[in-house]
Image (cartoon, rainbow, N blue to C red; front, side, top):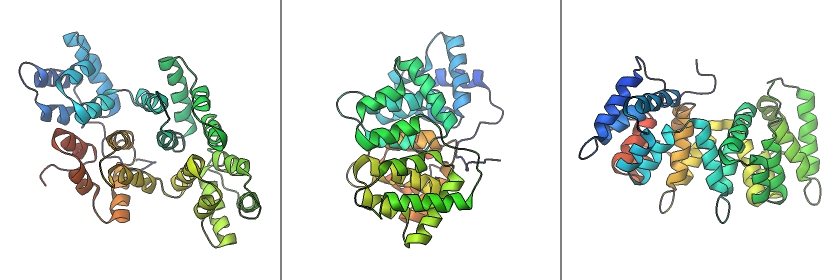
Length: 322
């Protein structure tokens, strides 16, 4: 039923957008706000259903739901609800735009989004980015990044990956050999070969290439990438490698990184949970516990609080009780 994984947020059965719009209005009217009602509706509907609720809200009350939510909530809880209410493509565009706005660039965000999406998703985002911000995503990326990393993002942005799913064992052997010659077998690194193979081959074929590489060298291509590259381009190539080998584990590591150590990177936590809840969050939870020995819920519990915490629980399919 779910070809790409098991989601934690699915479209609500017996969905009634008009009723939801009225219930949300009631939750915010007068003194105080019924945050639980906001969570129960917004966090338990699909993105498409949330768009319909917003249309009904505007039709019935002549008000913008996002603006109302902004005036009734604050902090990370507000950020989460507003993110959930945006059409998912607009949300991705805003995250990319924020990552490049102001001084400095948040390369991790660029990697997390561009290294993990399909051609169609990247093309949809590019078109919408132009509509929303009046600028081409590709030229924005080029002006914000440099060197090998810029070339990697430009390759990904062209969305030219083969998505046929066809595998060719002979070609896989050849590509593995080319990667070896471009990296470990020479002085310096021919990054263009890594770029070409990792950005153009389909995921199934890449799995085969990685196996061949390991067979030839006795260690993973990830290890070779870490040896041959550094900085953002290394992180980008590793992200592609991990998405091919185990996408759920890649996103589990992103969640872990958002919460590990002192303080929490809430923007990252929110983004991963919003973007993966309707795709494969159940698989990510399983991977998280396997990798880190504790449940995602227990980490969220330790790092967040209040309505924000309860909203995150709902999105990752966990009960409030404990």
